[in-house]
Image 1 (cartoon, rainbow, N blue to C red):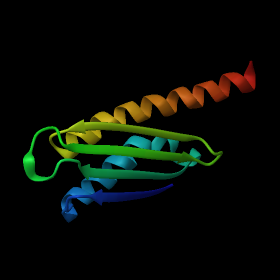
Image 2 (image 1 turned 120 degrees about the vertical axis):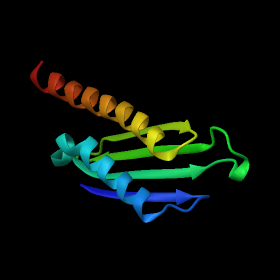
Image 3 (image 1 turned 90 degrees about the vertical axis):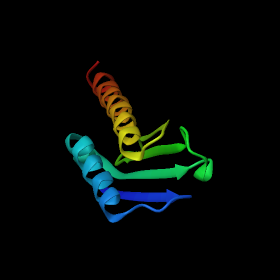
Length: 105
């Protein structure tokens, strides 16, 4: 599984970038054998005005052409990423369970 981070409209420090990668690895570790890539796109959607303007979008691609995309908005990148990771984990678990039930049922 490869992980990639794309920043649009803002600069990510090395510490934030490392934190994002470790959060991705921790969240998707149990699916690592089934995933091809995870891309985190972090955007500042309204510039320096403030408010809920950080968008985090995760694009998860599986080895068998599965695709999950989840996004969320917040004021800070890492807490927003945490919420998005929870939703992506839930979506992936449902996808895996659905494939298992189709295979065995």
